[in-house]
Length: 327
Image (tube, rainbow, N blue to C red; front, side, top):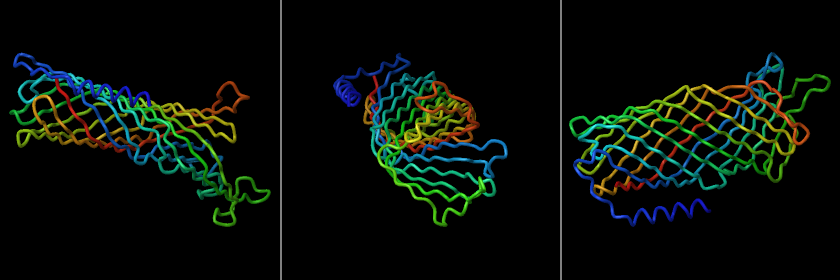
Protein backbone atom coordinates (compact mmCIF):
# COMPACT_ATOMS: atom_id res chain seq x y z
CA UNK A 1 0.00 0.00 0.00
CA UNK A 2 2.89 2.40 0.72
CA UNK A 3 4.26 1.93 -2.81
CA UNK A 4 0.82 2.63 -4.31
CA UNK A 5 0.43 5.84 -2.25
CA UNK A 6 3.89 7.15 -3.20
CA UNK A 7 3.28 6.37 -6.85
CA UNK A 8 -0.13 8.12 -6.84
CA UNK A 9 1.37 11.25 -5.27
CA UNK A 10 4.17 11.26 -7.86
CA UNK A 11 1.68 11.08 -10.73
CA UNK A 12 -0.38 13.95 -9.26
CA UNK A 13 2.72 16.12 -8.86
CA UNK A 14 3.89 15.40 -12.40
CA UNK A 15 0.43 16.10 -13.81
CA UNK A 16 0.54 19.55 -12.24
CA UNK A 17 3.87 20.54 -13.77
CA UNK A 18 3.71 22.94 -16.72
CA UNK A 19 6.05 21.55 -19.36
CA UNK A 20 8.38 23.90 -21.17
CA UNK A 21 8.26 23.60 -24.94
CA UNK A 22 11.38 22.03 -26.37
CA UNK A 23 13.54 24.54 -28.15
CA UNK A 24 14.70 23.76 -31.66
CA UNK A 25 18.28 23.86 -30.40
CA UNK A 26 17.54 21.40 -27.60
CA UNK A 27 18.50 18.06 -29.08
CA UNK A 28 17.23 15.91 -26.20
CA UNK A 29 14.10 15.76 -24.06
CA UNK A 30 13.13 14.03 -20.83
CA UNK A 31 9.87 12.11 -20.40
CA UNK A 32 8.02 10.42 -17.55
CA UNK A 33 5.45 7.73 -18.34
CA UNK A 34 3.06 6.31 -15.71
CA UNK A 35 2.01 2.74 -16.57
CA UNK A 36 -1.06 0.69 -15.72
CA UNK A 37 -1.53 -2.81 -17.07
CA UNK A 38 -2.29 -6.49 -16.69
CA UNK A 39 -0.11 -9.62 -16.73
CA UNK A 40 -1.08 -13.07 -18.02
CA UNK A 41 1.21 -16.08 -18.17
CA UNK A 42 2.86 -18.90 -16.29
CA UNK A 43 6.07 -19.70 -14.43
CA UNK A 44 7.57 -23.18 -14.66
CA UNK A 45 9.83 -25.18 -12.36
CA UNK A 46 11.43 -28.45 -13.55
CA UNK A 47 13.39 -31.17 -11.78
CA UNK A 48 15.30 -33.55 -14.06
CA UNK A 49 16.13 -37.15 -13.25
CA UNK A 50 19.78 -38.12 -12.95
CA UNK A 51 21.42 -41.23 -14.31
CA UNK A 52 19.08 -44.16 -15.03
CA UNK A 53 17.12 -44.11 -11.76
CA UNK A 54 13.86 -43.15 -13.49
CA UNK A 55 12.35 -43.83 -16.88
CA UNK A 56 11.27 -40.25 -17.61
CA UNK A 57 13.87 -37.51 -18.15
CA UNK A 58 11.64 -35.03 -16.33
CA UNK A 59 11.15 -36.08 -12.74
CA UNK A 60 8.91 -33.21 -11.62
CA UNK A 61 7.17 -30.19 -13.15
CA UNK A 62 5.46 -27.36 -11.26
CA UNK A 63 3.36 -24.77 -13.12
CA UNK A 64 2.34 -21.46 -11.51
CA UNK A 65 -0.46 -19.43 -13.13
CA UNK A 66 -0.21 -15.69 -13.61
CA UNK A 67 -3.80 -14.79 -14.46
CA UNK A 68 -5.23 -11.28 -14.61
CA UNK A 69 -2.64 -9.70 -12.33
CA UNK A 70 -2.77 -5.89 -12.43
CA UNK A 71 0.28 -3.68 -12.02
CA UNK A 72 1.35 -0.05 -11.86
CA UNK A 73 4.68 1.36 -12.91
CA UNK A 74 6.78 4.19 -14.25
CA UNK A 75 9.09 4.77 -17.23
CA UNK A 76 11.76 7.48 -17.38
CA UNK A 77 13.39 8.20 -20.74
CA UNK A 78 16.01 10.51 -22.21
CA UNK A 79 15.74 10.62 -26.01
CA UNK A 80 15.99 12.96 -29.02
CA UNK A 81 13.48 15.81 -28.71
CA UNK A 82 12.54 15.45 -32.39
CA UNK A 83 13.12 11.77 -33.21
CA UNK A 84 11.60 12.08 -36.71
CA UNK A 85 14.15 14.78 -37.61
CA UNK A 86 17.30 14.15 -35.57
CA UNK A 87 19.25 11.03 -34.67
CA UNK A 88 20.74 10.40 -31.24
CA UNK A 89 21.15 8.14 -28.25
CA UNK A 90 18.28 7.17 -25.97
CA UNK A 91 18.02 5.57 -22.52
CA UNK A 92 14.84 4.17 -20.97
CA UNK A 93 14.36 2.91 -17.40
CA UNK A 94 11.14 1.06 -16.54
CA UNK A 95 9.79 -0.35 -13.25
CA UNK A 96 6.54 -2.28 -12.72
CA UNK A 97 4.98 -3.53 -9.47
CA UNK A 98 2.17 -6.10 -9.43
CA UNK A 99 -0.75 -5.89 -7.04
CA UNK A 100 -0.84 -9.16 -4.97
CA UNK A 101 -3.91 -11.30 -5.73
CA UNK A 102 -5.24 -14.82 -6.28
CA UNK A 103 -4.15 -16.10 -9.66
CA UNK A 104 -5.48 -19.39 -11.01
CA UNK A 105 -3.83 -22.61 -9.89
CA UNK A 106 -0.50 -24.20 -9.16
CA UNK A 107 -0.08 -27.76 -10.53
CA UNK A 108 2.58 -30.29 -9.52
CA UNK A 109 3.29 -33.41 -11.61
CA UNK A 110 5.79 -36.19 -10.81
CA UNK A 111 7.05 -39.18 -12.82
CA UNK A 112 8.63 -41.65 -10.37
CA UNK A 113 8.34 -44.90 -12.32
CA UNK A 114 11.39 -46.87 -13.44
CA UNK A 115 9.44 -48.71 -16.16
CA UNK A 116 7.41 -46.08 -18.04
CA UNK A 117 6.67 -42.36 -18.32
CA UNK A 118 3.21 -42.56 -16.77
CA UNK A 119 2.24 -39.88 -14.25
CA UNK A 120 2.61 -41.07 -10.65
CA UNK A 121 1.73 -37.96 -8.55
CA UNK A 122 -0.51 -35.00 -9.29
CA UNK A 123 -1.54 -32.15 -7.01
CA UNK A 124 -3.40 -28.90 -7.57
CA UNK A 125 -3.54 -25.85 -5.33
CA UNK A 126 -4.96 -22.35 -5.41
CA UNK A 127 -2.21 -20.00 -6.52
CA UNK A 128 -1.58 -16.62 -4.91
CA UNK A 129 0.81 -14.07 -6.43
CA UNK A 130 2.70 -12.55 -3.51
CA UNK A 131 4.86 -10.22 -5.58
CA UNK A 132 6.01 -9.44 -9.11
CA UNK A 133 8.61 -6.79 -9.83
CA UNK A 134 9.92 -6.05 -13.35
CA UNK A 135 12.85 -3.68 -13.90
CA UNK A 136 14.28 -2.91 -17.35
CA UNK A 137 17.03 -0.64 -18.63
CA UNK A 138 17.27 -0.14 -22.39
CA UNK A 139 19.81 1.98 -24.30
CA UNK A 140 20.39 2.44 -28.00
CA UNK A 141 20.53 4.77 -30.97
CA UNK A 142 17.63 6.36 -32.83
CA UNK A 143 17.72 6.83 -36.64
CA UNK A 144 15.02 8.86 -38.46
CA UNK A 145 14.08 7.84 -42.01
CA UNK A 146 12.42 10.50 -44.20
CA UNK A 147 10.57 12.04 -41.23
CA UNK A 148 8.15 9.10 -41.18
CA UNK A 149 10.05 6.21 -39.62
CA UNK A 150 12.39 5.85 -36.64
CA UNK A 151 14.71 2.82 -36.35
CA UNK A 152 16.15 1.88 -32.95
CA UNK A 153 18.79 -0.83 -32.35
CA UNK A 154 19.32 -1.31 -28.62
CA UNK A 155 20.76 -3.30 -25.72
CA UNK A 156 18.61 -4.14 -22.69
CA UNK A 157 19.08 -5.49 -19.17
CA UNK A 158 16.01 -7.01 -17.51
CA UNK A 159 15.54 -8.07 -13.91
CA UNK A 160 12.36 -9.97 -12.97
CA UNK A 161 11.22 -11.21 -9.58
CA UNK A 162 8.22 -13.51 -9.03
CA UNK A 163 6.88 -14.84 -5.73
CA UNK A 164 4.04 -17.37 -5.39
CA UNK A 165 2.18 -19.33 -2.69
CA UNK A 166 0.26 -22.57 -3.27
CA UNK A 167 -2.77 -22.76 -0.95
CA UNK A 168 -5.20 -25.59 0.01
CA UNK A 169 -6.02 -28.08 -2.78
CA UNK A 170 -5.78 -31.81 -3.29
CA UNK A 171 -3.43 -34.51 -4.55
CA UNK A 172 -3.55 -38.03 -5.99
CA UNK A 173 -0.77 -40.60 -5.97
CA UNK A 174 -0.43 -43.86 -7.89
CA UNK A 175 -0.07 -46.92 -5.66
CA UNK A 176 3.33 -48.57 -5.67
CA UNK A 177 3.32 -52.30 -6.46
CA UNK A 178 4.21 -54.23 -3.26
CA UNK A 179 7.81 -55.43 -2.98
CA UNK A 180 8.68 -53.74 -6.30
CA UNK A 181 10.25 -50.31 -5.65
CA UNK A 182 9.76 -47.92 -8.54
CA UNK A 183 6.91 -49.95 -10.05
CA UNK A 184 3.45 -48.35 -9.94
CA UNK A 185 -0.10 -49.21 -10.79
CA UNK A 186 -1.70 -46.75 -13.26
CA UNK A 187 -2.72 -43.59 -11.42
CA UNK A 188 -6.33 -44.13 -12.56
CA UNK A 189 -6.54 -47.42 -10.61
CA UNK A 190 -7.59 -46.65 -7.01
CA UNK A 191 -4.98 -43.94 -6.30
CA UNK A 192 -4.32 -42.47 -2.87
CA UNK A 193 -6.08 -39.13 -2.28
CA UNK A 194 -4.86 -36.19 -0.18
CA UNK A 195 -6.54 -32.98 0.95
CA UNK A 196 -4.40 -29.94 1.80
CA UNK A 197 -5.31 -26.99 3.99
CA UNK A 198 -3.53 -23.65 4.32
CA UNK A 199 -0.25 -22.71 2.72
CA UNK A 200 1.35 -25.78 1.16
CA UNK A 201 4.25 -24.52 -0.93
CA UNK A 202 6.01 -21.28 -1.86
CA UNK A 203 8.16 -20.55 -4.88
CA UNK A 204 10.19 -17.61 -6.20
CA UNK A 205 12.15 -16.86 -9.36
CA UNK A 206 14.75 -14.14 -9.89
CA UNK A 207 15.76 -13.60 -13.52
CA UNK A 208 18.53 -11.49 -15.04
CA UNK A 209 18.65 -11.19 -18.85
CA UNK A 210 21.02 -9.27 -21.12
CA UNK A 211 19.45 -8.94 -24.57
CA UNK A 212 19.81 -7.16 -27.88
CA UNK A 213 16.86 -5.72 -29.73
CA UNK A 214 15.52 -3.68 -32.58
CA UNK A 215 12.38 -1.59 -33.03
CA UNK A 216 10.74 0.56 -35.69
CA UNK A 217 8.27 3.39 -35.12
CA UNK A 218 6.15 4.88 -37.90
CA UNK A 219 4.21 8.16 -37.85
CA UNK A 220 0.81 8.25 -39.60
CA UNK A 221 -2.18 10.61 -39.56
CA UNK A 222 0.16 13.23 -38.00
CA UNK A 223 -0.60 12.45 -34.34
CA UNK A 224 -0.55 8.65 -34.37
CA UNK A 225 2.51 6.42 -33.96
CA UNK A 226 2.81 2.65 -34.30
CA UNK A 227 5.85 0.92 -32.82
CA UNK A 228 6.92 -2.72 -33.09
CA UNK A 229 10.09 -4.50 -32.07
CA UNK A 230 11.73 -7.44 -30.35
CA UNK A 231 14.46 -8.43 -27.89
CA UNK A 232 16.32 -11.72 -28.04
CA UNK A 233 19.08 -13.40 -26.01
CA UNK A 234 20.71 -16.62 -24.75
CA UNK A 235 22.36 -14.67 -21.88
CA UNK A 236 20.10 -15.66 -18.98
CA UNK A 237 20.66 -16.24 -15.27
CA UNK A 238 17.98 -17.46 -12.85
CA UNK A 239 17.92 -18.33 -9.15
CA UNK A 240 14.77 -19.99 -7.85
CA UNK A 241 13.73 -21.06 -4.35
CA UNK A 242 11.10 -23.71 -3.57
CA UNK A 243 9.82 -24.43 -0.05
CA UNK A 244 7.61 -27.49 0.67
CA UNK A 245 6.07 -26.49 3.97
CA UNK A 246 4.72 -29.82 5.26
CA UNK A 247 7.94 -31.66 4.39
CA UNK A 248 10.03 -28.75 5.73
CA UNK A 249 12.25 -29.17 2.69
CA UNK A 250 13.72 -26.33 0.65
CA UNK A 251 15.16 -26.47 -2.87
CA UNK A 252 17.40 -23.89 -4.51
CA UNK A 253 18.47 -23.85 -8.17
CA UNK A 254 21.16 -21.90 -10.01
CA UNK A 255 20.22 -21.79 -13.69
CA UNK A 256 21.62 -20.19 -16.81
CA UNK A 257 21.53 -19.97 -20.60
CA UNK A 258 18.42 -21.00 -22.53
CA UNK A 259 16.52 -18.79 -24.97
CA UNK A 260 14.72 -15.49 -24.32
CA UNK A 261 12.58 -13.59 -26.79
CA UNK A 262 10.21 -10.66 -26.43
CA UNK A 263 8.14 -9.22 -29.28
CA UNK A 264 6.24 -6.02 -28.48
CA UNK A 265 4.05 -3.38 -30.10
CA UNK A 266 2.30 -0.15 -29.17
CA UNK A 267 -0.13 2.36 -30.67
CA UNK A 268 0.27 5.95 -29.47
CA UNK A 269 -1.65 9.18 -29.82
CA UNK A 270 0.14 12.51 -29.27
CA UNK A 271 -2.38 15.00 -27.91
CA UNK A 272 0.26 17.75 -28.18
CA UNK A 273 4.04 18.16 -27.89
CA UNK A 274 4.04 17.22 -24.23
CA UNK A 275 1.26 14.69 -23.57
CA UNK A 276 0.61 11.34 -25.24
CA UNK A 277 -1.40 8.19 -24.57
CA UNK A 278 -0.37 4.70 -25.64
CA UNK A 279 -1.79 1.17 -25.71
CA UNK A 280 0.91 -1.48 -25.57
CA UNK A 281 1.39 -5.25 -25.57
CA UNK A 282 4.48 -7.42 -25.14
CA UNK A 283 5.19 -11.12 -24.69
CA UNK A 284 8.21 -12.54 -22.85
CA UNK A 285 9.20 -16.17 -23.11
CA UNK A 286 12.13 -18.03 -21.55
CA UNK A 287 12.81 -21.73 -22.18
CA UNK A 288 15.67 -24.20 -22.02
CA UNK A 289 17.27 -22.75 -18.88
CA UNK A 290 19.10 -25.41 -16.82
CA UNK A 291 21.54 -25.70 -13.95
CA UNK A 292 22.47 -27.23 -10.61
CA UNK A 293 19.85 -28.00 -7.96
CA UNK A 294 20.35 -28.10 -4.18
CA UNK A 295 18.20 -29.01 -1.19
CA UNK A 296 18.13 -28.94 2.61
CA UNK A 297 15.77 -29.84 5.43
CA UNK A 298 14.59 -26.97 7.64
CA UNK A 299 15.65 -26.29 10.35
CA UNK A 300 18.04 -29.22 10.75
CA UNK A 301 20.33 -28.54 7.76
CA UNK A 302 22.18 -25.22 7.80
CA UNK A 303 23.59 -25.73 4.28
CA UNK A 304 22.28 -26.85 0.90
CA UNK A 305 23.60 -30.07 -0.63
CA UNK A 306 23.63 -31.04 -4.37
CA UNK A 307 20.39 -32.53 -5.73
CA UNK A 308 20.97 -33.03 -9.46
CA UNK A 309 19.76 -30.83 -12.29
CA UNK A 310 16.83 -28.43 -12.52
CA UNK A 311 15.28 -26.00 -14.97
CA UNK A 312 12.86 -23.10 -15.14
CA UNK A 313 10.70 -21.32 -17.68
CA UNK A 314 8.50 -18.28 -18.05
CA UNK A 315 5.80 -16.97 -20.37
CA UNK A 316 4.35 -13.52 -19.73
CA UNK A 317 1.90 -11.39 -21.70
CA UNK A 318 1.89 -7.71 -20.68
CA UNK A 319 -0.87 -5.38 -21.88
CA UNK A 320 -1.70 -1.94 -20.64
CA UNK A 321 -2.01 1.82 -20.93
CA UNK A 322 0.64 4.53 -20.58
CA UNK A 323 0.43 8.30 -20.27
CA UNK A 324 3.57 10.03 -21.59
CA UNK A 325 4.58 13.41 -20.12
CA UNK A 326 7.46 15.00 -22.05
CA UNK A 327 9.61 17.88 -20.77
